[in-house]
Length: 476
Image (cartoon, rainbow, N blue to C red; front, side, top):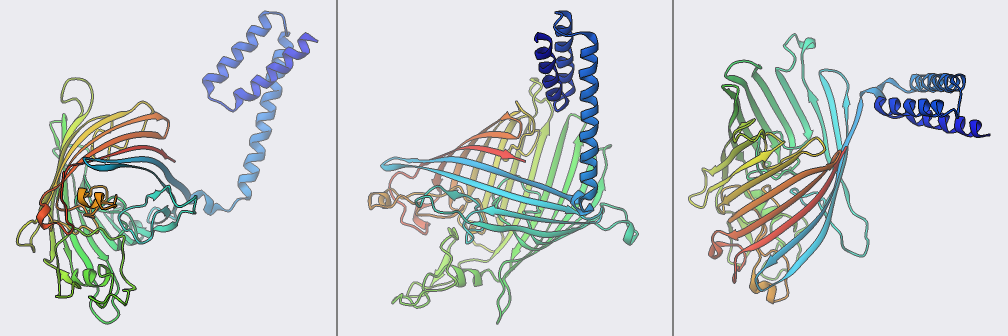
């Protein structure tokens, strides 16, 4: 009886082992040897159990191959991807009741690699459909359902042999997609912005040796709105990016971009006016979008109706980062980065910048600090200075705002200046991969209005706001 029980236990162990790593398999075999040495089973019984397990495993693999053979071949070209982020966020300011909220973000997409030259991407994401710069959902409203929206839907063409050109030299992306620019911060574009239109890339240089490692050119034609009886607001632009190796010890990247916001005044008139007939305000504007975070200067008529932005927007953007594998002798990568914007069409208050430094396993792109392996960590600091009309605020960073203490005393706990301009901020970030694919992030923002007198809101009282974020992000 004892031998029969022992033999059954051994078989169970062998089944488990066959579904785990080879190292664990070797460990299980050692257990079989231990049972053999203790006289609980015989050598023949051990060999028989292992042979039966091999036969069962071969049969399982055969059935799996047969099942796969029945599946349509196009499934082999489909790859699923996504992430889930949970966040606790706190707002703390002198004379302001502390605000704490929980938020979540879920994104699920697929990539269809039809061939080496054609692919398609599709992604769904949570968030308010009227907000172009956030896919977060706040945990509120008595357990109500949360919105899921079309976030991406685009094709990518990388012509090669079919057109007789070198593969990888040119690519075209068209549809609704993520930000296709080289960017190290959210100075000009919030990470959640999904432009619509087309982007092209020319890879002029791509090599692993020498000083110049890469040289590419990006072009953009992004459609902001469709106007049936006039010119459409759209964003033409271009960017040049160069990558260099500095003696094999460090890498340097430098990029220059120009974004022109054509007919941007139509955006202000159509989407920022809550009513069409001030001062009576009896007729609501059906196109008004309360989610747009505007902190730019606007021009109003005598009745308070927004006519246009005070200035146009042609944003010149310089981006650079310098990284080294072991610059401080601790065997840890570190680097510095800068993102600068200058609006050529504004007479003043037209400069913005994000500058910072990072250390850790990411090795680059310290502002985002995306890590890969369990145990990886990273630390970064970013200083932001963005004047009122440096960039178009409805597309820039969503997580810096400014509160008014006076408004808070009047009963409001919401930011009274919505938008990522006319602000300065110190941003501290720490990341750690606790478990495979699970990254923990802690961020602190110390925010101030640059000029409270020219803010779109009546900002009074203590200007400094402390905003904290604790994230748990699962990627798959």
